[in-house]
Length: 81
Image 1 (cartoon, rainbow, N blue to C red):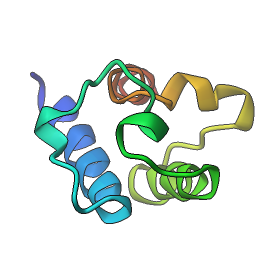
Image 2: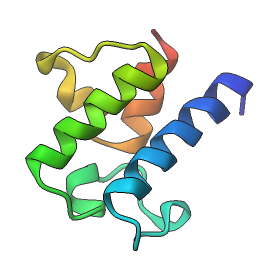
Image 3: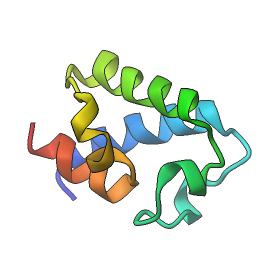
Image 4: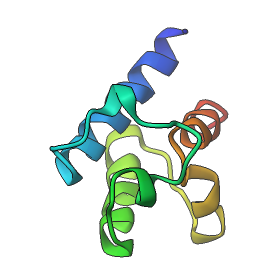
């Protein structure tokens, strides 16, 4: 894993654990939708997208929400930005 991937995963871990502290980030299925894996609602998902923008400086427009809806998808999307 590159340093960039490690940094992105650290941000995703921080933000998702803030939304669902009871979930073990390392055991979730990274290919399943975050809302299902972390049992979060649409407002929490919006907070997650906003946090990505604030922490990584990457704007995720609404049409791209599906691309960051899984951990693996978010990692790929954010690496390409």
